[in-house]
Image (cartoon, rainbow, N blue to C red; front, side, top):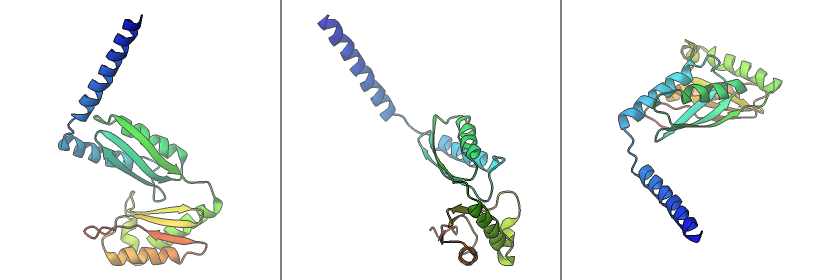
Length: 182
């Protein structure tokens, strides 16, 4: 009986060792990862309920996709994970997207912030099309601006416009200007 237990234990340990070695030797094709990243980005932007008040970002860890960000609708969080899981080559999806709490005041602020930013003449060109590049995230009166703008002056104007909306407690301006970083 002892020999049988010893043999089974040895076999299990050997399997775990071989599995660990196989995973350690796993090579990730840069071309495949680039294709996955492009497809993930496309699928996120194609989600029907994805709007100016949602921010979904991702990281690629090998062939695993890690989703994070904030969304207004809980179904959007689930829909994002579902479409990403269907992408060829994606092995696993970790969904760390935060669903923002329901709040009438935050809804009012979203509307007012949208008007303050996207209807302001120097920033109006960002409002063209269905995927607006400035994401307006509101959580209990605290605002975070995410996305990409063309110029540092546009980033600053968006922050000033957001700070000028009555009822906003704070503004974190995370807008990025290409070539400038954060």
